[in-house]
Length: 204
Image 1 (tube, rainbow, N blue to C red):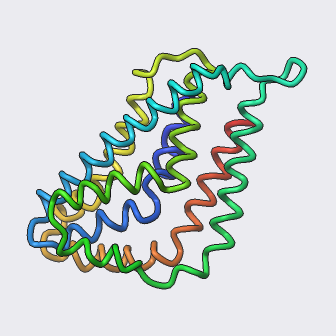
Image 2 (image 1 turned 180 degrees about the vertical axis):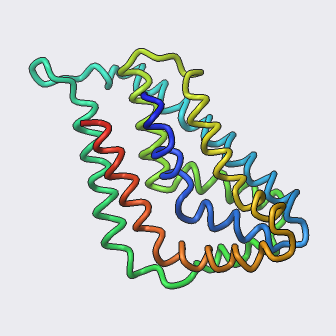
């Protein structure tokens, strides 16, 4: 897994409901505590799910599958990301406002915020695809799992962006975050598509 692939993968993990929830947490009465709990949930779940897929690929030997002398893992991953691109484009007009569960973030307990972070990373299709991709690439290049730490670090840094804006802009930060939140809610798919296309280019 090349260093240049880390940022596109990390962006793909966080662009969507993941970063939107982080921005909503800044508007709570306990923005720092809730944001830290959320980031902890994201990081721990990301490491766990990536390790599970890494182990699954290693045990099954999926990274060794080939047709003739050509390995099949990269064509499979490219097809997977093309599917996600098409899915993002087709669903772009269906997202007009945050879902009801997201609005409940403002009043959720810290334990529920942790569960929300866990579910977003463990079950969102794009995040499942990314963690599977990282696990597969580590195996295909015979790289130990611990070498994925730059990817985990990049995701953690992105998850801290709302909190960073909060500290940088103070009370005005919430206003800017709300505008960014609204834009990402309806146009975030554009960034996601660009990032996925870039990653496909890296796999070719």
